[in-house]
Length: 254
Image 1: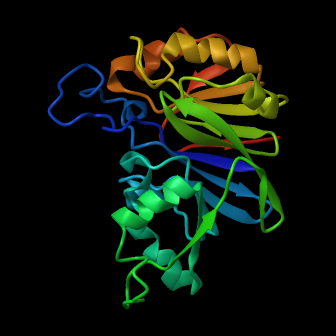
Image 2 (image 1 turned 90 degrees about the horizontal axis):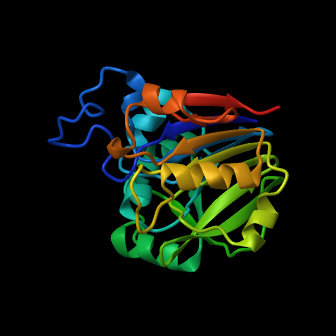
Image 3 (image 1 turned 90 degrees about the vertical axis):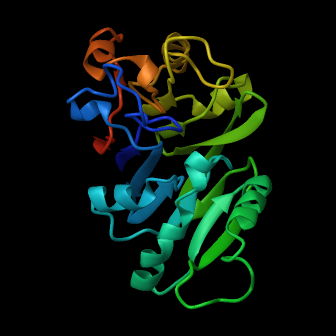
């Protein structure tokens, strides 16, 4: 399995417009962060989790020319706003793009992209097959996907597990039931927003504690704000087996 961290930034991205803090003005490429998303290649299947505002540039930067399906974690714009840019995959592959999400997520997408779902298949608009899922496991072309329910303050969000890889973004609470679904994960990607307390995201300290509790061989943090600090400094202070993710980082699972 090959996982590419397409984006590791929070909703504003990094650098933030108008900000001249040391992170936003850093020359380290690891401090430049698109909105959070990943690409997964497994058993011939090509998946993207979330299509944020930077989706087009993420596809170009990572050189992705085939996409079989999109998984949506939740309905916030920093995770859905780039859906229109699945059009080139429609043209290349000559088929609709399956987009998997919970009913509330798909309903939000249908409202925001009403022209896609109007029933008038106007030439050139995205061709999308909305596929409803719940908290139960499902299969895409022979690959088992296990949803991991978590909470983003009061909003339910889905993480996803595929084989021994688990991805969780936009969370500040993981139940014992969900932890049981993650058990045995080899590689974990988990959100860690900033140092200070936040109403709907794990702080760095909380994410470290959760990573230790889950006990994956390797954990990478994502959905990172400029308020977390410089990548090089934070990375040097993390426990063994835990790292900050960075954009376009490639992770090869055993």
